[in-house]
Image (cartoon, rainbow, N blue to C red):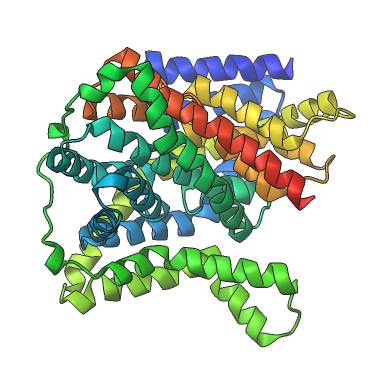
Length: 447
């Protein structure tokens, strides 16, 4: 019965979002209330359960998510992202242009959320494809692979950040392992898959696409943008701080009363690292370039406003997750798998993949997966960072018509439905499956 109730709840959620076009946050709340009552949670505890789910989820990620959005916007508005992309493209040269797009998109993707990175990089890719007379999609696939991998595997992106908090995984460790998994995954799902896609749907590589829906694009004179080194350091600074803290912890363990190690751990905390990086960005991307504080504040406010609905959706996902836990669904699944040899990494990936295909939203799928998997983790000596990555990895699979990203790719690159399935949907599936393979391999090595 618990699994049947969850299945009906998911079907109701799909219907509310897809059929009735209801706001995702509102739909999640309605389904959470319905499922909570159906699972037998006492009426007087339903509201507190949902509030606890929303508060617990947002309380962990609001700082990281909000500060990350502001940092990305400052780098973008100053032209730092364009400087990074164009410098790398010039250094790689025309013969290795695909790899230049991969590396620059990966760096930009770490600092910026998927949609922001996509909107920012697509005009650059269009311009390069036109100037070099190469296929637009041959550059677009590597860009999309890098943005999708960073979105699925690396904090401060919402999925991995939220899941790490729910599982109690160390975000710095998730970041380190995520980079190790993401790099080879991007190379396979990007440049290597591009060669295969040209054989599967050659017609897609003759399309010119259109970015008219993006409106007028801000054009930067590279001479007036921050230098490559400054732009790169600013975008990567939170990653550097978190990786240093994680490395020190791995080598030396808990430092006890050692003040130096305590300071490193404090500075490497994701929230602190993001705040320090934002302050540095205010200087490097703003004050140092004679940009007024008023304009800097406008960029930060715009970034905060743009993620408002995403925060609500994440909170709604947290409410649904808490209902599943308090309603005993997670324990029911744990009982089913008790004594089995199935890896929790594989289970998390499977559940996230099913929810992703059903719901469309990778973030909602990942958070909902946590509610089903958390009670089971107590039975296993699982690496929580790798379970986090597996959940994010599963939530990336098979983007199709119920995912906004599917339609963005289709329209921007001028593809037919068949061509979008054969390129973007297949790319997201390759990213998910290849990512899982590398996660399982890393798990075997760590053990």
